[in-house]
Length: 427
Image (cartoon, helix red, strand yellow):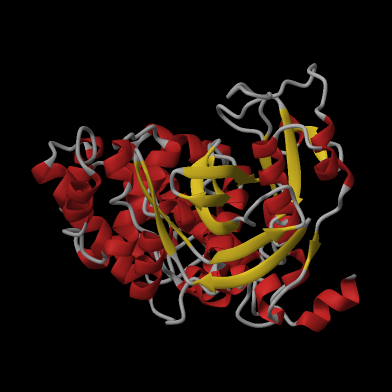
């Protein structure tokens, strides 16, 4: 069997009964040397779909929208090795080929594995799967034809060869076109390894417990979290409570600015800008006491994220970035569930770390907070704010402004700004 690349197109809107999906690029191939009266023309389309608990690579091999020969999904290791899998079916049936079934001879030429060894997650089937490199056009097409044709001796015995018409056609511009998608998936992969319920303060268990049990303390820490080490800022409400003997919104709202500033300066861990932080705390305290009966949790309970953000932006010094960060932490740490539509309303907080990571990975070309917010909305509309924590942690841990630790970074394999010579020295 011979596969000849005959053309390509930038994108395709593929229509399914449940909706449309965009694929890009789409490679057109011709198949010859097989038992066809007329050599077929096939299309290999590259896209993404959220499935089995993650945003995964999605590849279709089809003649037309009514005749899809095979669907491939990114393996769990796709971010590292770019392998995709297709679940095999029994002959003449839509049932999956189980691991205790005999393997049809037409599949023996391929790399067939137990599906659970390469694709896991909610609702992932347990059956036989063929695993292929996503850039191997001949094998993608050959597996698809094998699924369609049934037992065919020459399929089992003939290794497909490729006859490209252009140099670029055999290596479709998947990486360059979908680089941003690769970066999003890498961030989501890293996010899945981050544990919630950790320490806000870097190890002060008493302070962490205080933050989790006192919504007002949590809201105070988040509202003044700017310009200093995050762990130090998040310990301030606990220290302030010990210093004053209380953390009462009514009393704090009535303190003079200079008085509260002096107290903040006396703490063992203090904000970078004590006067501005004092002004924020007084403003926050007045909001909680006057509008929410002294209970900070009333700000978010039974409220939509957009309404919460609007309320939080009334606090002096709290802009949309901090407001969205607060809502995202409520989801991660405090059981706040806004539902699918609500998650779409939560943005990233584009601080210096996130802007740097987004620019270096190609998620945005514009080094601005607004560009980062828009990029997250476009690339992961289901929950843009989910990209916040992994990008922030990667930015401050490895992706430094100067002397970044690229080899240690979880985005090492997909980051386009890493000097190729670094990778060569490590290989």
